[in-house]
Length: 283
Image (cartoon, rainbow, N blue to C red; front, side, top):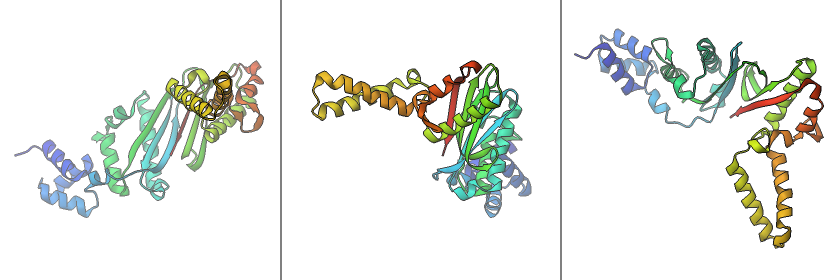
């Protein structure tokens, strides 16, 4: 006769239901697999595995922080209706709370395999898939150690004060964090959410992205009939425009289009303000 652990494993494989749901169902049905499957189906807890094949393009992003770490979590659902529900939002908050309680840097797979109650976080996801009735996917997990940095964030299309459709996070350092610096950092977060830069500056850009853009622009210039002796000069101008679109420091500042972000930051040189990194997570 199979032991209880093997029975739970078999029931989970057949239904896709969570660990605790399977354990409870077996207890209620004297460890009878078929009766347990029927019971889970009646409760709407079976076949979560089939739901996991469905496309999940909606959802929400949450931000969670304590004195040691700041975490961004993106969970996708199938519909916007589900993403706005209290059940989904409570689920996202519980994931954030779990990360803060563990207080360590994890990637997505490590987090999904983390122990949660009598199972894992992945089991918790399976239970919520059954409860909400939609596929749920942990799409993004970013954890930063606070250490000597300051953080600011901006939420667009918010569902709660820490959850929304888009979250931009700015990590910066300065020698005097006053109200002016706090306003600047929040405005920069709004800028990042609106302008979606690829990197802080030109040197931080993905080299393959730069190479590809140069090739495209060079082909366009040569195909337009421009002589090769002036093609390089035109290419230089095209690439400068490109950098002004995709790098944060070279973009036109959304609150003052006549200045680049770099020029705006120069005005705060006495505070020694420096952008260390940024994150932009959106649906």
